[in-house]
Length: 345
Image (cartoon, rainbow, N blue to C red):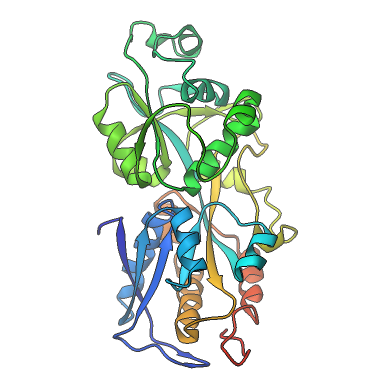
């Protein structure tokens, strides 16, 4: 199945303002970070249903724009929106699944997991102060790079991206220079680099360019057979990306106290924590333009929470804990309403 446009199958259900018919299409757009797991969930769910939703993997920024403009039934973003912005745009948000962003490289002779990087070194690479792979600062951690004189080619996102937000948020926490000169957001003024659209675009560039480095959601690294790196975490340990280290980073999340579930999981404490862990948030209009469609979006994610944990782990995402799922589903009641003010859930 193509990742750029996912067809998610969703069951027919009765909503307060009508019924979703098989000919209707439930639409969603946004996070490419979410695309692999949304696709997996959709494949399993389609075996039970006849209605469809078209999810476009166009980046978090574009997804936020489309749900704000009411051109889709839900948006998806890896950057949580602050409460003031949610209120101004008439939106709700809730988390769906957690996962990791990884640094990936294309260096001849370097396999997945062999290279060690710190956040400070990545910041220097992306700011252009480290330009060759045999730079002394890199060789000090990775003696095997001593004889690799290839130039470093930086690959970054071209679009407004939640993956970029997580990556730059991490760099802002580990590098004062990065925080001051570049900062953290879904789009930043990159000092340099080749730009790829979506996780898939970044992965494609890294595959093709010798000496390149990029950042992608972990599932894309695995699917594209890219060499991911070890990263140094907040406790000073070099860790490998997998569901165990992502789960360790998520363990300290305090969802109950975060306004609208807006937890940011980068650079969490813990010896086994992966330092660039994030969450996919779904965004919906509080006043549903199509109440039956909004009800059906809730139905899909209810099904995913109940049945999708195994698929999430298969793709090295971290499912939401049971107690958090209960909080999420409780939050749905009364937050999205039809034109008469009646809750669609």
